[in-house]
Length: 243
Ligand SMILES: [Zn+2]
Image (cartoon, rainbow, N blue to C red; front, top):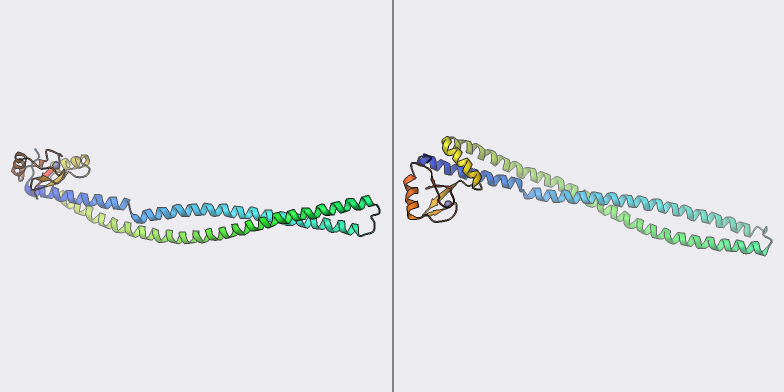
């Protein structure tokens, strides 16, 4: 049996309330909606950043591809001009040579057509990729702004809770100072085992810790102990106080 006056029992109950308030604040601090929103935005920002890098790489590849094709078109054109020049130079004498030249010119024309078709496709892809890069850049910019805002909101919420926690911890010190050591260490051990709630109020004949009713004999025992010692609920094992 742990001796405790009615006043000490009352302080133990106060201590329980402060500890519960501290626990709720800690829970809120660990589960800030602002933090959740911030985490989500940071994730999205990371993803957009990766997509933007990929899109820029793609744009670079397409630009190089376009340049290669343009150069190739120019080479084919130059070749065609020189062959045409040869054709009208009057230097070609034989029918066979003329046929070969005509064949060459026709194959150059078709090569140029193919190259221009591909070039058109590349340019279209480049246009699409350019607009994707622009969209992603704008989104990245927007998200960066939101992350800054949310960081501020998160910090503000955390600061408020930290201030409340500091007040409650100070209050706890004062309240705990009024409880003698044996009762305090009993309370601390019990609280660890009872999911944070070691002291329950007796309301009528119901223990507020487990919501079960006490028998008439149990009730009498608790009332008899009210000014002498800590009473416990037979069902849940918590300290029962009459407040
Ligand atoms: Zn109980």
